[in-house]
Length: 242
Length: 242
DNA sequence: CGCCGTCTTGAGATTCCTCAATATAGGTGG
DNA sequence: CCACCTATATTGAGGAATCTCAAGACGGCG
Image (cartoon, rainbow over the protein chains, first blue to last red):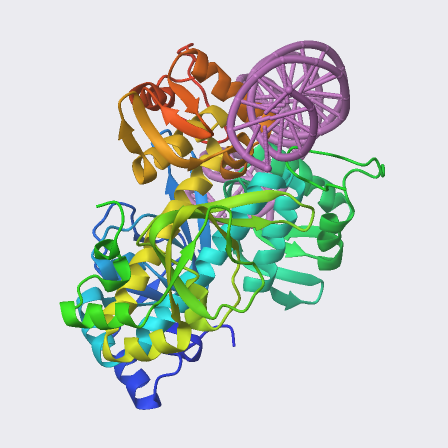
């Protein structure tokens, strides 16, 4: 259930022949790791879904700072601003080889007129993404780097993780800089934290791939409060009022 | 064009009589400042829109830290998880008196079957919100408190600002803590920055309301780089590579 | 007119970033 | 198959931004 057309949210709830029809109208494209799928600022002409592979959506500020907005997995809609004839707000780059489906926005819009369910499916994906963003916002506002990092990795694990003999592997390269861009931190800081976890055998790297040997241990980072002292706090961040 | 039913995005593009019909089916409710519209965790039974007034959407972490996800203005859809029979992910609290419209999710769903345009309107709002969130994520990752604060205020200004004799006023109370929760900072830090701006006559407060006397000046904070030294940087945040 | 919720402001602690030098891995061409 | 080369990662030192904690001032409301 990791890839293939059967998990495309956009098609959910459609009668099989309708789904097949919509699918037939998609443009299929093979993409390779590091290939740019679209670029921020371009007019968004079609709605995208990965049938397989993975991609990252990122933004670059005028000053060159990067933010990874999201890692996209197969079945998720991206580039949906096309429906509204807007511009892509992010760069999309494949992080592993795969197959991309595209629906020209015009086509999809007319299709929706007959099958409103498709619009629901888009709404579903957007809601899910919005929720993800809210979570990240909360994290970024309140959590220290270590927690954010742990959470980011756990998310990657259960979105893309593949069980192997000695741990869960993220099937595409995720560099220190990528993680930094994902959690709003910097390469050196991420490197230090990850190094520590490597020494404790919680994670490992095997040819550019991240392998989480002990998922539990990483998750535990979130619970063992960094402050062992049971000193009651009355923070202006509103952390724990008594 | 600040409130009233004519700016409800949900109704955009509908034939007048259809819009009127949908509007007729809404439940109207008068709400008062500080009134809770719904709470995070509740099953989302209806989709909401303000006809007038304003509300804030916020989350509270288990530890008590707060985040303001968004200030909602009249015409914007909120509580849309209802369409998917989910739970409200945030608390919604009115920040000023106003009128709230609600459509039970069931009703709206069947309406959409005949009028897919309504689904588009929802998608439009969700896309817009997603974009807002991406912007905030970028800010939170890369910008110092001062910039985030300036941007937050400018956003409030052009979303809710009302021109008065001596500046633009935000027509509902926005406390230091609120601003802190909005930009991922703390009350004392926000207070200090704002104090400085008050002394420079850029902003002011008149009975719990924020008044921006010199919008330009606040905007200028974003451009005058905090680092006056033209020292070339090669940061790991990827700020300016040459 | 007094009280309670908000702000202000100070001082110190701390996390994390910045800058920079080196080490490493993995892919490549001989 | 090995040595090389380049992109990445490691690590150290220092400093800055901002958070914490805490005490007092303020101001709007009842």
